Amino acid sequence: MNHVHVGKRRLARHKSERLEARVSAESKKLFQEAANLQGITMTDFVIRSAQEAAKRTVQEQEIMRLSEQDRKVFVSALLNPPKPSPRLRAAVEHYKKVIGF
Image 1: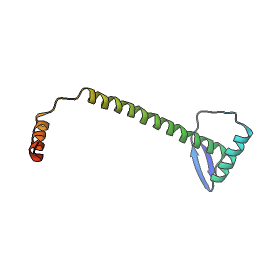
Image 2: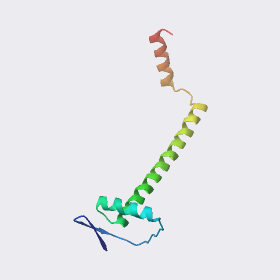
Image 3: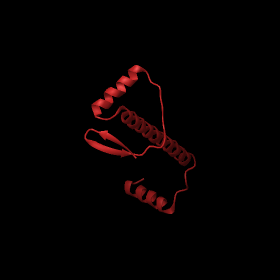
Image 4: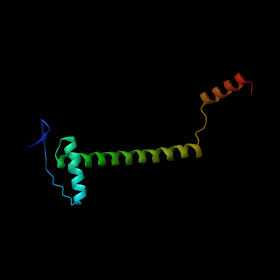
């Protein structure tokens, strides 16, 4: 198990996979500056940032997928409405009587 020092805290982290990336000098400098501001290593900063972006992307896609499904259900209900139930018919009749229709 590897340990990471974050400020005065020591966090354990399990690693089993390796990820490499080539970045510009400007990007590396920006990542390092941001990591320094947060008091963590550049590696931890990049990993946290990538995880947050990945989670956000997956969540947004799930929301869009659900929205697409909801849209299909809604349109289907509009185009193929169910027959009114006896209870709904009674409510309509009551409404008509109340407003004097």
